[in-house]
Length: 136
Image (cartoon, rainbow, N blue to C red; front, top):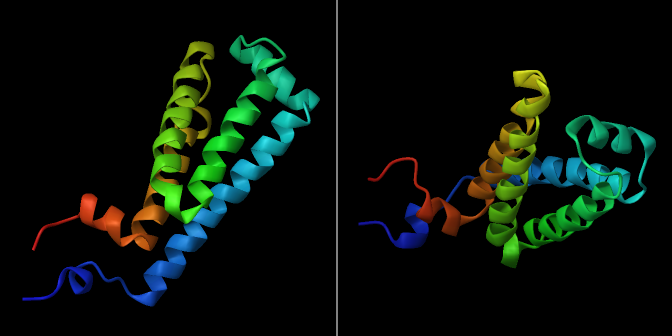
């Protein structure tokens, strides 16, 4: 009978793929955070289309910064992923109100969430133990 560590071991390539997936999410969110905190005109216009007040962008940027920092730090990555999932859910919920396209706008938060959790699943044996694809 294999040990618990051996049962949850992943090939080295999977670990690096998970890190790359998480890195892509973190880089994208860093760009989004920067744009929100800089209060760029394009961010304000997009917020107005969604019905948000102009000052909302900075608040969302600070929240997203905190969630992303938690996700980027290995000890708090699961908490960060949970919080990011909630953040992405809010983004998904905001877009149907203004009839945005399904695959490019509404589901974009879902794509980010899948990438964030997929990257975490590949790089963290505790997450694999908690969310197994199948049980042996």
